[in-house]
Length: 137
Image 1 (cartoon, helix red, strand yellow):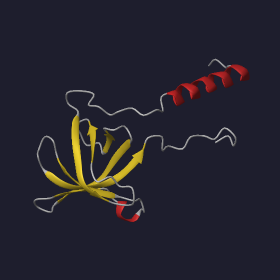
Image 2 (cartoon, rainbow, N blue to C red):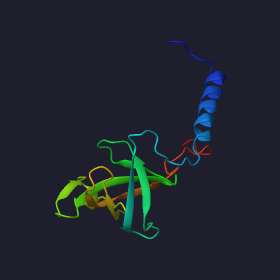
Image 3 (spheres, rainbow, N blue to C red):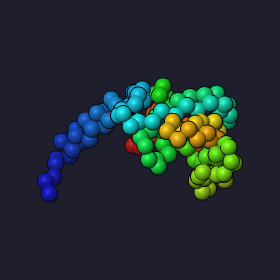
């Protein structure tokens, strides 16, 4: 395996960190393929700052993370209840006791037209902790 000198290695790491930080800006989450689903969330309630409504996109499948269409962050869905029957469609174990500030909204699935009360949490863009250069992380 090839080893780099300390100077070259530090330069390479600095360049990679700079390149990664350049892509941290806001990107609008427009549908990327014809299969992308756009969900409208309305009548939202939750902690202070909870929007009353928003839209988010995701690819079809079981993934719970959706990108907000205004580019401000993500909505991580943790549970859903069918509004017509009251049946729990899914519920992420442990979410009721982990202390995260959850929101809940009404949404209609864009393919099945099933109305559900959906719960989850919003994560803002850039919310991941970045290393602090003055403390080395």
